[in-house]
Amino acid sequence: MFSFLRKPTGPSPIREERFRFSLDEQTLDCLLRRSPRRRSLAVRVSDAGEVVVNAPQRLGVVDIHGFLQKHADWISARLLAARAQRFVWCDGALLPYLGGQLQLRLLDLPGLARVRREGDCLLCNARPDQAPILVTRWYQRSARVLFGERLAHHAARAGCAQPPLRLSNARGRWGSLSPKGVVSLNWRLLKAGPEQLDYVICHELAHFRQRNHSPAFWREVALLFPEWKQVRGELRLDGRLYFQF
Image (cartoon, rainbow, N blue to C red):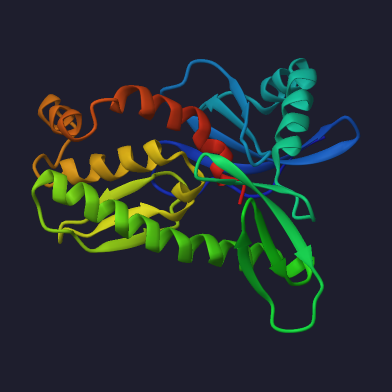
């Protein structure tokens, strides 16, 4: 089965439409992206488990269907891998934290629902369905404290006043610098190694002198964080794990 859910929308040359595709006795809700610049078909499975098909603008539905059937085994394998990577909130689950891990312990004790850290454990006194929001809030509170300390440290090294800090919940970037000089840092960096956090902070501080990504900008980054190339590569590899929750 291959059926469209709605017509393409928007003025962009890349047109998107949702469709359903039957695979191994299951019906998948997929995304089809058509572009006049494409000359061939491509399929990928996102970390969230969505099947995305990139196709030439005028390619027929029959050709797309045949392409997906041809790659059915690969799609099934990727879907299984994506599902295996999804975080499961349960007692004993391992939470990434500052390059290491904390073990989540779900408690059922009298009193208010709350979260606290004890050594390598994060104790969450709440029902399992409450854990995601409570643990996320704990990460965000902890991130605000630590990020403020590291931002002050590196701003002093850079010879500039400590800029205002804003926590970000962005899905696609680790940090940014606003036109008004506010540094935004993704709270999920609390899961990253300390050197990865420091790299992102130094990256944003370098933008005070160079509001671009020119060679001059990267020279500013190197002055603040000489190992930036290696650590940036590590963050690119590890980063997707930090977005599991």
